[in-house]
Image (tube, rainbow, N blue to C red):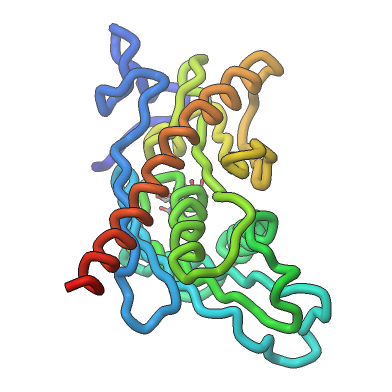
Length: 249
Ligand code: UDP
């Protein structure tokens, strides 16, 4: 879709207060997670979240290389977020850029908080996040799927990492920004937490929110993460129930 005009004259809410895709302000886009999708990876997951389509492959824990990067106390979590050239409207130049390096770093740090890294000194855990189709919120969708992929690799974890975004459009706080809302809205707040403890492991913000709006946005995100965590758990249990059933045949 080609959108003409400046950010200020783009209407993102209809007269009855609905969003352009028909959602209410607290409604998530549809989310689907599948695991065990790649045979050669130790763990894998595929997520569709709105128009986002993202594959995650996990390898490890394996000996960290080069050796001087090894940590004698824990495993190093190395996430690599990559957008395919065809994943966005305007062809994305292949290879890492500032944005993907930043996203890889914040995702690595978030996963490091959930994985029992102390159990695997001198090793690395590689998490490849490949965005096949991008539709806003890819860092959070990638991280949410990466958690499932790590768990499916049998890597011990203290907790799930689960996230969502919220933001502001036309002065209203809304959950799970669409691409138009992300591009032309007034704020974008991606956040991820550990599901049991609620500890915040990723928090970034673009734009402006008042303290009240920030509280409202984080409250909405926390409520949504409960539902998203159920989807993560269902993906894992579906896979492992299927495996047990196949093994029992
Ligand atoms: N985007 C794009 N080209 C780029 C980077 C991003 O078209 O090179 C789009 C893509 O749809 C992405 C959205 O802009 O999902 C928002 O990007 P942002 O940097 O806010 O990260 P995200 O919301 O995906 O975590």
